[in-house]
Length: 84
Image (cartoon, rainbow, N blue to C red):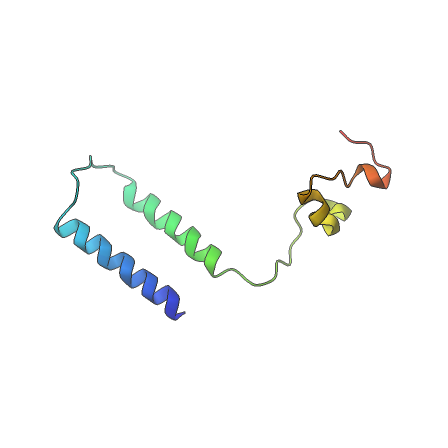
């Protein structure tokens, strides 16, 4: 959690510096802050995600052979199922 606190502190400090002395004169975008907060929240959520993924991905039985899928092997054809 210390790492998260340090990263957030640096981010806030950078935003404050940019507001005080902007490096460029960018046009105003109405939804910029909302998008920035949303994307940063996703990044923090990805960093803080659980160590183990307990849900399924939607591949059924073939999910157990994810390594083979990543190697571009057809895991459905090897079980007698037609390939679409």
